[in-house]
Structure formats: structure tokens, C-alpha cells
Length: 419
Ligand code: HAM
Image 1 (cartoon, rainbow, N blue to C red):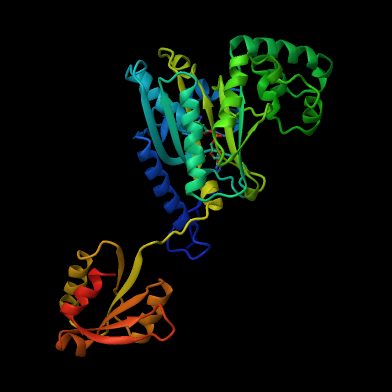
Image 2: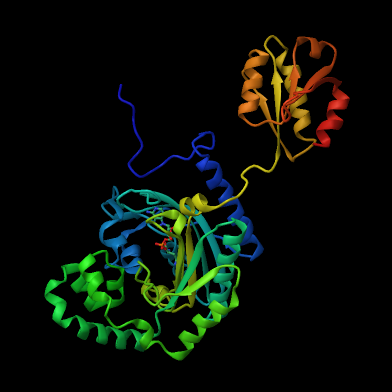
């Protein structure tokens, strides 16, 4: 029979796979991020992976690439169009609006898989994982500072080199209107060379033109008016203030930074690393004060970000295994139940040890090979002889000498407690 293969762009993550230990790193990064979120007193929220398609059309936006080309949408048995979430923000705000929580302040984090039907390449998957943060009910100012403070801490804790945080401000409603007018005038002579989607963008949200992959349009945009020229003083002050507040990571004001989702309205940012190749952005976010009202609720100040977990774990430089590792080896022919009882008792004596029980019960040689492969620093070996005399053979696997000694069970307990 044919083997069933996974879908394109949807990788498995198995900690056991030796290949670069990608999974071990990913899981470790997830745990480190949860620890960081805890220190800021951010609460966890979990929303469903499936939502109504209209949620993403009304939030991420009809003109965004995500909604336009990349949604995993299908009809359910009731013929309703539903979609696998391409991102986490829309679901969180849907939850707030549905439960009339817009007047409360909240700090949320979430972690989980997202789906976008993109062309897979290095760092770009169709199922990928994000960790996100949403700060709800906070005006512009301190909340912006705190998000960038979190980004700096993440970059430091995960020991990420060669990274830059790019920041920009999209201004207020009048900035947007003045800028839209200027850019429409600028594009008048070039309009016939634009494709349909860019003409739509020019009408509905000209800022998104700067997101284009079209090389000819990119050339024309080089001399186009820039948003910064239309920004009010307080927006420029905020950018300068944020840039001056953090020294540990490079922060760059980038007037061309526009995010690929339609809901942003003020401060926006992205962190990039040259070590990632073409898909260089490993996190991004910004302010989106109008989303709750776009989803039928009351207006609510909101700002957030999402971290691409595959990308950030690729560039993180952290030790994945800090605990002591040991192997408990029960040799062939030994009364398993009696021997296993010891392993069970040992485990509760020291939670800092990762104790792998070898369940194959084969020869000493094969089991020691296995112990070395799983990087055990020490092996506790029980053969028939040991069990009869209530002894255990301890073998040091850390040093070349491979010293070994026979100890009583009571001595083993003392040694194990001090590992
Ligand atoms: P986003 O920029 O679309 O923002 O995604 C955030 C991060 O997810 C990206 O910087 C990237 O690292 C990762 N990512 C996106 N697409 C892929 C993919 N196909 N494969 C691998 N990684 C990917 C958002 O999703 C917003 N919800 C962020 C936000 C939260 N804004 C406000 N609150």
C-alpha cells in the first residue's frame, strides 16, 4: 500500500529526530517565551483554530494577501464558510466583542498553529506556529514602550544576534487622508501600468502599495511621497522616544514599514535578522484601535504582536538541555518488576535529573550505546548478579575513563539525590 504523506508546507516536529534538533529548540523557545510572558503578568487566552471566514475578511482585510490568496477556507456540513485562522489577533478581539469586554483592560498571550496557503520556502510554511501578545484597553504611549521592552528581552534571553527592530507610525485619520490624496496624485500618470489589485489598493488603502512585490511598482515608489512627511509631531516624538529608550538592541525608524494586515492604525514594528535569509522578519505587530468596532463592538485601544516560532527558534542560540541526564539499564534476564521499582523510587528523589529507563532489556553493550546516544552522563546498571546482592553498577559516561563502581541501593540513593 502507498504511504500517506503529510501535506506540503506542514512539517512534523519530533523531538527525537536528530536532524539539527529543530524540534527540541522550538519546544525550548516556546517554554522560554511562556516564562517571559509570566514575568510581565500577561494572561493566557486560547481561541479556536476554526472561525467564520467573515471574521478574517473584516479584520485582516479583503485587500491583504492573506485574505486575498492565502486563506484555508472551506464549507462545513451546514454550508457555512469557515477558515483555519491565519493569525491570532482577530480571534482574540472576536472573543472580547462577543462577551462585551471592550471597557476592561486586558493583557493576553497565546501560542499555537496558524495556516496560510503560501508558496512554501525556507522559513515560510503553510502551517506554522506563532506566540502572540495582545494589550487591550491601553492608550498610545506606555503600551508601545512595554511591547518593545518585551521584544528586547526576548532577543536577549534567546541570545539572538544580528537583529534590528524596525519601527514606524501610520499617523492618525487626517495623516492617512492627506497621504492618500498625495499618493493618488503622484500615481495619476502611472495608473495605466498598475495591475488590478494595486489599483484597488490605491483607492482603498494606498499605504499597502508599499508592500508590493512588483519590481516595476517598487521602482515608481522610490520617488513617491513618504508617510513620515505627513506625520503629526506627537507620532514622530513617540518614535524618537522609543528609539532612545532601549540600548541593548538596534532600533531603526523605517518610514517604509507597512504591515501586511489592514487593521493597523498607529505605531507598527517588525524585528528582522539577516541570519534568516529572504523571510527575515521573526516578529511583527502594532496598534489597531479600530478592529473591535470593525467587528461590531465598541472602540477599544489595542496593540499587539506575534512571533514566528519556527523563525525565532532558528536564530536563537540557547542550550536546549540544562538538566543532568542518566540512564537506568535493566539487563536481559532480570526480574523487571523488582528492578523497575528502584527506577520509580529514584525519580521522586531529584527532579533535576532526566532519568531514561531503558525498556529494551538487551545486552550491556547495546544499552550503553543507547545511553551514549541519548547523552546520559551516568548509567545505573542492574543485572542478575546486582539484583541478587541488592547492588547497582554505576558507570560514568562523561569521562573517557568510563569509571565504574558497585554500590548498595542506599548509597545509590545518596548519590542520586546529589546529582
Ligand atoms: P504577521 O506579521 O502576519 O503578524 O506574522 C507575525 C510573524 O509570524 C511573522 O513575523 C513571521 O515570523 C511569522 N510568519 C508569518 N507567516 C509565516 C509563514 N507562512 N511561515 C512561517 N512563519 C510565518 C500577525 O500575524 C499579526 N497577528 C501580529 C499582531 C498581533 N499584530 C497585532 N497583534
